Length: 326
Ligand SMILES: Cc1ncc(C[n+]2csc(CCOP(=O)(O)OP(=O)(O)O)c2C)c(N)n1
Figure 1 (cartoon, rainbow, N blue to C red):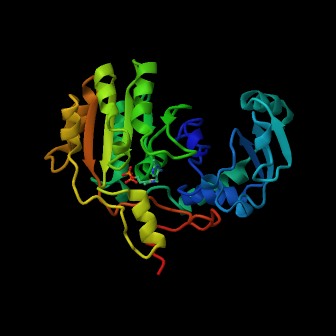
Figure 2 (figure 1 turned 120 degrees about the vertical axis):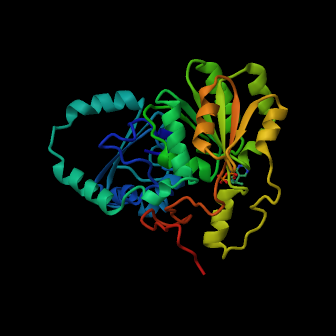
């Protein structure tokens, strides 16, 4: 799945490979490398998904289905292009396909997944983003709608949130506009007042549209804003570490902004897990009551999104958190 497609298959479905591309798990990108037929439905071969396009799915024939004819063959030559509604196109294709045992291919994918596990135990240590994201998911339940801002927190959510439904994730994947998350969450809560809505934001992104805290309070929307606060523009800082010899510039905040105090200033309920004796109890309390609420969560500034395909490289070039180019 692309970032925008997450949820079309439940993340724990045996055939789900998760997200492909720049921050995919290794097994996913390696499986794409192996595949000999790619049916690409409703996607546009964005570089975050494909990496260097000439190295993307090099062995595959491509069937591209898209409602917009100008997308077909725009970036990746195709062997068959189908212009139309993806659901109808796939339904029409189905009777043409002979049922075949795909044990060998599924076995190959399982081996890739065993050799390259998606997560490691230490990823779920207390204070690490994955642990928090999974716990929020447990508490929010499967009906929750999720919005994100743009940055590391967005990628962590894409990697670790157990999505089960199409359109469950509202995220800015094309332009990647910081400031998207809070207004998107307000919109989701107005459209689906009976569903829990969680906005995962960063301490940078939240400041792009922080005035909308007032709208959330005025409208009494049931949204929970979880600020993964690493006191930095984390994704920028990560690129400075990996590709610019740790020349950190304008990517960290020297002032520790008190987001809970700001939210309270807007009349919003707020919690801060910093230094809490029992952060889990506080989280439960925060998520358990109706109405808008902000939860500030301290995150290690060094926690990184891993693996990462360097911009312009093929998706098989995946570097880990321990990589530094000197
Ligand atoms: C409006 C806007 N400005 C700049 C960028 C470039 N950019 C992408 S991620 C990022 C850092 C985001 O920081 P934060 O919201 O704190 O999230 P983190 O990466 O730390 O999780 C920046 C500056 C952007 N995507 N959108």
